[in-house]
Length: 351
Image 1 (cartoon, one colour):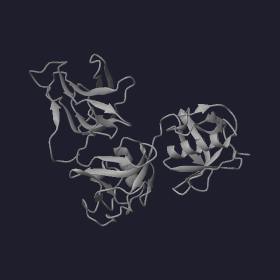
Image 2: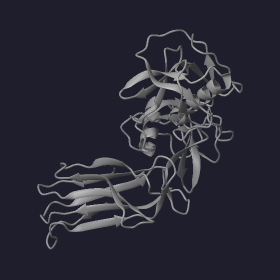
Image 3: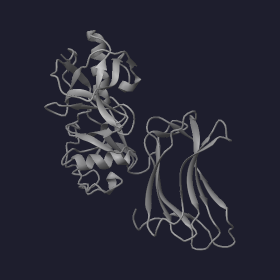
Image 4: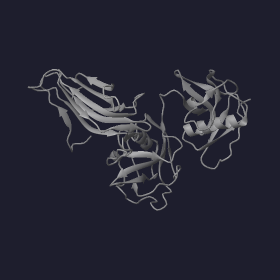
């Protein structure tokens, strides 16, 4: 939010009557990954109406699913909302932003700075690309990769000079995730192309968009802009979904016992076979889910636990997350994730 530009609002004064609606309809979208609509809203007044976000099935116009709503007096300030637009059974849709008034004066509903995360694509396949729009590229999973930002008509990268956990948090929240697991430096996800648009980011952690963070200026060329050897990357946190994984009791954050979050607690995972190929596939899937490229399963030590949460893991190796793997009970592996050098994966069962 800033003091420049304009916003839209519903007029609630006479001759408006209670129940009158203003509807803002989007172009047709499809979903490719995490798709959220983000905006600021202002609802201040004693007889405030209702603001809602719905998706309308493009192939069955009578099917409208409400995804978010807010009613009543929300105070004299702007609020931020991020609405997940993904809806089971709806592949193509319009977004409907609806303001419903009560007919009382001084109860206007205002909306500003509407934007969408990279997983929202226009029906023709073109991404929504406003100035400052960001995306992740080159990673093994959708929540990890090299940070790219759209500016002045082209995509470019972000320099890793000074890039830290706070900066990564802002990036991931802008993309619609709850936060960051950790930043990745030195072109971990490969070098990008074009300009290095942003360098020396210094985010406070309160920003909603990285373009609002302090930096050295657009295309300042304080970083390696020829080989892109210093492109910043990030692994974003997908916590809250069933199957969130972590490595615990290890010497580093890339090494440890495999645990999965389910039902409000962390527990170990039991592999479904002693077969080296099957357990190798477990390492592949887990490490990709954590944002790494490869993994090795080690013979580990016994560590106390509250028991298995997911038993009998049988992975093919191309799954995006361990929740897509089959289940069949047996032993428990410990996984170590590598950066880039490991090509052949070796593993042993936990004793």
